[in-house]
Length: 232
Length: 243
Image 1: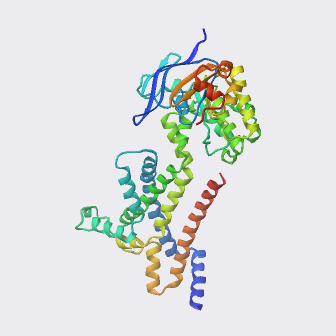
Image 2: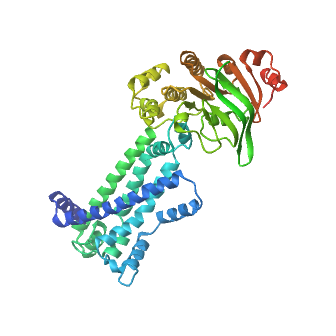
Image 3: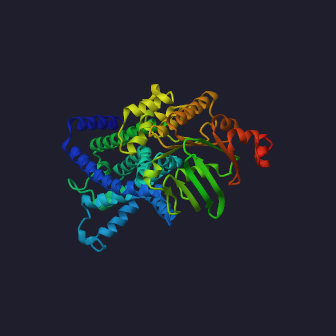
């Protein structure tokens, strides 16, 4: 028990003093997750909006794929990306395996269905009569679509935060495709695994605290947004 | 001769092959309050959607000024923007009362014309709530915001689809008063769909009774209630028409 307590104090010390290794790992984690989330948002929000607004042949199948994607085990995604990017894989020529690029690819695959799926749900939760009512006030089809998306905006932001939460704390796929290489592909979660195995609990706990704080902040933000929705 | 706001000829609207509205001939006069009464499923709300050009008729024509529907899509935007509708259950935007009333002007590129917005809010008695979130309002207040956002753009035609259903007497009275004022002061043509025959009697210049998608009787309000010609209209007025 004493060791855990000492480890916790040391971890706080590392965080407060801005330990170089801790900062490098945190910075890479945020960079990889940030870029992956950007891609997921750029594709997922328009796709989710489209799925929520339009009815077309095969929509149910696309939604089924999207929902399946929302439940993808990260390690399976990692395996898939690994096979694609390995030297014998179809995209091996890119030379991305064991680089942050491969980690970004796998994180996009994990977070994109969440962003698209939750965006779709947010758009679909807008009162379906809104479109007709703004059209009846003289809106164009495009202005009506914008009005619906504006109504769904908080749900869309929540979808992005959910995507962030899913990849910042994910370990299976980044370990597989990144390889946990020091100063290159070592991120918060993979470093925690390594430091724990090494018995370096100070750094492992410090890294754990950083992950928890990041996820906590994302959730606080999400709850505040949801609170606003309920108050509305 | 009174000028027509709408001239409807051989109008038919069907959904998936089921005819819900069939009107041989109907004129709605410019500047009048025309009430449409009838039981649920008689095609009243469908008629309002067609009059607002939110959907095209399956066949037949609606003439509005110089514009005549051709069965291909809805009317041009400049025509649609002369008409607004207030629905039975208003869906307000997730912004302030002021933002909701400003919406119609914003989408017309007329910016936030403060004077007109304030005047519309004054008219519906909600100026003091302009900064309140619209979704926190009571049912009656929400309906008054819906009315304000429909009249702020000064439409030629205001369509009201059961605007006072489920409202308390105070709000019913207020909305009826505003409707009457708009019609008298600005000459706005009003198309009112209501279940409430007494409301139709209080507000309308002429009344049309609809049953099963057909026009049964159209008459001046006094004549509609005093000397209905169709036996079904007579039964409706006397409260004997069960639906």
